[in-house]
Amino acid sequence: VRSEGVHCAFAVNPDLPTGCCAVLTRRGERAMCTELKAARSYRVEHLLEPSTSELLARAHVVYCAVLFTPAVVRLVAARTEELGSMLVVSLTAPFVVRDAERKALLLEVLPRVDFLFGNEREALT
Image (tube, rainbow, N blue to C red; front, side, top):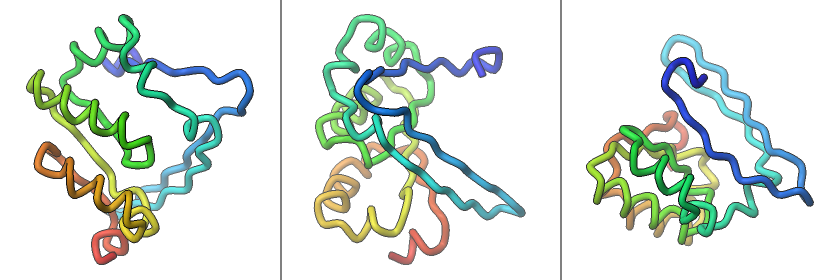
């Protein structure tokens, strides 16, 4: 992935297993299955660490799911706007849009989102 210009800064939680995500695409359609596991414990402090903050500052495109804590999503949205980076957000799943707190967060950051994607079912929700 790095050879393609994608740089990642993973936070490690030694008490929880790593999450995973499988994505299938076919003829413009996407299906995604995610098990968050350690990603549920991601903290905004990791974004504020110098190495992660520097990586975020150099990024041209940043992907952030609204499954992260509101503090993480708000910080990423604010930083990408401040830096002129492209913010990419996925609707992720119908339950995300149905959840009142997640929906409110999505609507709050939507004006800062450059590219929003999801499937038809997520969009209709």
